[in-house]
Image (tube, helix red, strand yellow):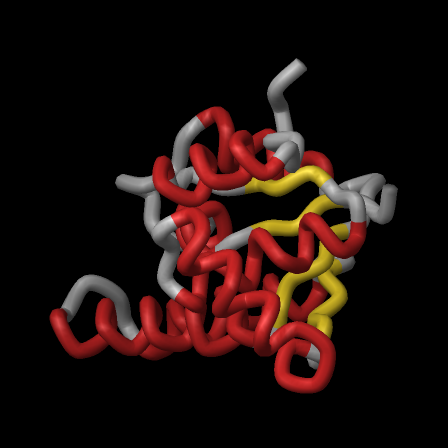
Amino acid sequence: MSGIVIDGSVTMAWCFEDESDDYSEATLDYLRSGTAEVPSIWMLDVSNALSASERSGGIAQSTSTRFLELLRSLPIDVQCDTRDKTWNRVMDLGRQFDLSPYNACYLELAMRRGAELATRDFRLMRAAERAGVPIFGRA
C-alpha cells in the first residue's frame, strides 16, 4: 500500500475553519510521517474551491496563496496519468457508482494504488466501500 489518496473535500477542510473536523485534522496529522497521492484533477479541485471563495469574499487572495504554499510543502504526490492510463476506467467507475468523473478519479487512483481513501464526501465514501476500497481512519 502506498500511503493514502486524499480528495478535495478533505483538503479544503484544512483551509476553511468552518469545515475542519477531527477527520480532516487526523488526515493532515497522518502526513507528518506518511505520504499521500492525488490525481491531477486535485489541483483543479483545490483551485476551483479557492477561487470561488475569493470571489464570494470568503477568503482573501493572500489566504489562498498561503494555503497553496502549505499544500506544496506536504508529502503529496500528484499523479498525472489520468488521461493515458485511466480515462475509460474513470468513466466506467463513474457509471457503476453514480459518481462525477472528478470523484471517480480519486476512487480509481485509490483502487489502482491499493491505498486507503481519505474523503468527507458521502457519495464517494459509499462508492469506495462498495468497491472494496478502505476508507482512511476506519478500522
